[in-house]
Length: 219
Image 1 (cartoon, rainbow, N blue to C red):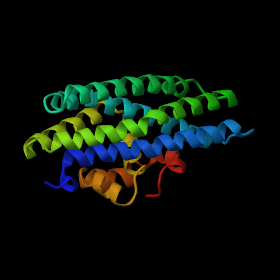
Image 2: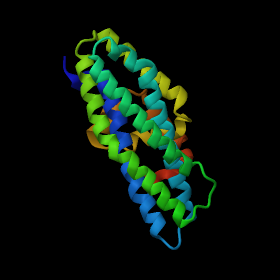
Image 3: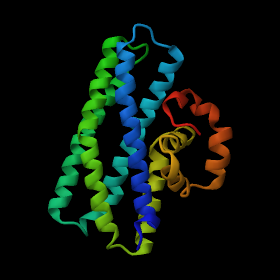
């Protein structure tokens, strides 16, 4: 079985890569905003939507893993591996809540608020990459012991959970696709209906996420 065609691994890695890129954008841009004397209102509006979408997506992604994915992993992986994943999720959740406190604050944001947001995003980033790598390794290990049908069902269940809990699709789907590029975007797009990725995202939904465009990869 090739993991290049495994829908479970494609979905997990795609979301992780989009979140990783977005978190680095949050760290860099918040520092820049905090150090500027004057801030463009339209750009900060786009950043706030970008940051909210990141927080909503990461929260839904982790909830889906805990409520659906980890049930399968516990029957396959060692207790030690699961304890490590559970502990990592607790640390990520605490850091995410700290970031959400800044992101949810009413605008406008003073320089000190921007720099506080920067520190919160940087704190989340500290543990994120190691957690992401460990989780993907464990998911690959577990997927190899699942049947094809089990992988397809779990991938679909995680996808449906994310759609139901990550926020408006007209923001979240473009956020995922345009925080990816090249083969990563192609792989994630292969899991989406053509009408969504080829019609809704580039045309009908464009007005709902255009304000985030400065922080996304080109179409």
